[in-house]
Image (cartoon, rainbow, N blue to C red; front, side, top):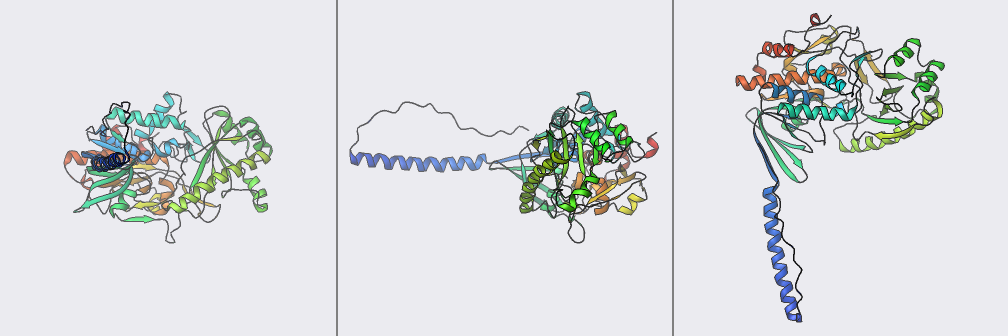
Length: 499
């Protein structure tokens, strides 16, 4: 469906004639001009009201939010025959894929693949154009895939164009209409225009569960005390002498020989270090960020690295007051932390901030309650139920909102995410992907990484497309059929599939 803004007719401008007016004639002419102006303004307002409402109807699937989960869901649904529209608030697709963060969650702690399918296809496409180096084992995160963030936007856009996904950017979700246990319409705002989208199935990929929340779906948020993991600001430093940095870390016992070998083997690395320097500087008030280490992510060029360090404590990322404060604090922390690195750490003497990300890295807000909820006990026990649609094996990583500490728990074996964790318990035609799937807060510390979000998103897209074909609700889809399609496309649903 093609929808176009109406444009005003261009009028030919002519040179005005000169007139000689009496005082009375002047006022008469002015009154006539004023009346004409008022009539013209009323007509323009009436035309503007008509132009300001744009409807997108008759879609099978509407995906709200084009981060890892939403992108995968939209492409998978379209590939399986659904008519799909993908709506995103940013001016690009990919969400955190385009943040500069590395993609985590591809391998378990033993180095075995737990994610395939669309998640692997995305990395393969980036690698083919020199925007990634594939997936590599990581001593801290189990696995890592460093990417060129701007190319993630391009690959995401290409995938949507190739599969026929209709895309709307710069659209902010403002309201949701429901009727008889279903979502019927989502309403957005774009530059003063009201955008209405109707679909048979809606998928919430907003990260914050915004679609479900506005529609009144059951949600959870934080722990019993309302505590949420804090967001971080990601920023890039230029002018870094990486070899000098590595040598300094070794000389100051911040890395061992194995870590040094890891850093030299490939530019595909992420390093968590400076813990000793933290313990030295933090009591003196010279460590300016609320995290116990430097998390540095390599950029795939000579002198840049990405810093994932500044955290904004006690932040509710659904509250604009907190978000505004956090954005300001994050930028100031980035400046202070960079000055500290220049002062104390070799290789950073000439470093400078080349870019501070436009948006915060949000770790946690709402989760939508599904027909099933994955509990931490099941994850620790490596439960892989029959309706598993994705595996996950990233360690449980929970950042405190009160101080610089983090809590983690190793995941020894992959666990399964059930299909009904992607289907709302409130609305028959609402699915969710990414950060807002139905898991408890503890296991959320494992499922929130991007490879897992890509895998779950692909499963939701397949499930939605099958629901359209079978003319049923997503909760009634044959999960065995969903699993067959996922495996056919390279998805990993059992560790028996891997070497």
